[in-house]
Length: 80
Image (cartoon, rainbow, N blue to C red; front, top):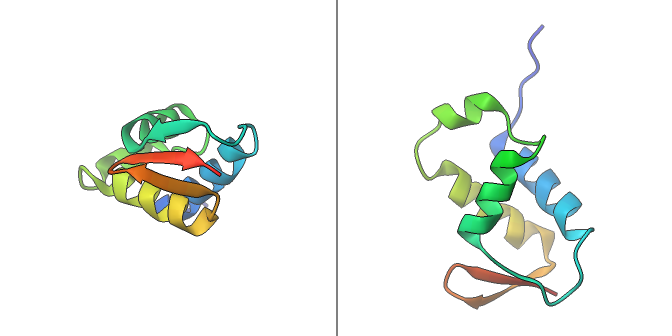
């Protein structure tokens, strides 16, 4: 049986794992975070078949849900 994954759920897991390894004050753009997500074990190949900016939106959603990031300027987030 093939396991199903949710892009939003996997992105949130990635952000929680990633931020646990960071010091506060570190700054990343959404594009950088998406790139790191694509290289992580949380990213599944079939997510690539989603519409082109689905991962960007999922990353924004994960950052908001985590509550540990602050928007410093458009598209740039700082770890609280």
